[in-house]
Image (tube, rainbow, N blue to C red; front, side, top):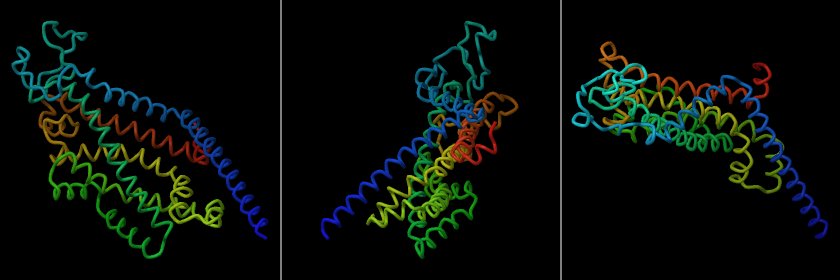
Length: 325
């Protein structure tokens, strides 16, 4: 009897190992197919190119920017003045004048350098807040979906309460309590983003937990944490990836809005929302000081939205077939 039982256990372990290898190969194949579908979409490729340029600019800001973004140029250059218009030598600006591609702001700082460094800060804001929200939201949603019962009810009703408030207004309230500042703004944006990821994670876990490979792991004696984090979660990441990509653009927009209201990054930090706030009254007299930061925000959010839409279609074969270019 003992020999027979041992043989059955070994056979079961071998079968489980083969199934695991097969799932790994299928997973790699699925991601490769998704990447091919993504690269077939012109809008997604455009978004990837825009994001690549943005990341390159952020990483090389120290090289690209001709000035320190917080440096006041009074006394450094001659004949400088507040809100000086752009001076580009290739477009006819006199060679004896210092070149300022986007002009000088109201504090006589190079606007081009500030916009370049603002890309670095905006990407940091987007990835930091979304990473925080995904980790917390996924953990809460996964536990709620897998365990269920009263714990599920409690967690999801708490998420519903947070979702009942407009996200930006709730973020403003949180920052008002914590105090203005970039760190508090990041925390507020992360908190208001948690419910969206919690709901997505819960829905994915509810779909996956009844599948055969989960039942097989449970029958082989897998514990709750092992099944949840090693079996269910890896197969529930697709909608979270899409939601996270779209959420980065939203987080950058919310951070710019908080900074515009004076609750986010504080002067002289080169943040696009702060730059818009400082020069908002000069929209008719010095429109270039408002145009360039606003354009940077728009292009950044557009890039992440294009990538997010492309990922959504690429990771769902049904959408990919129905909406093929």
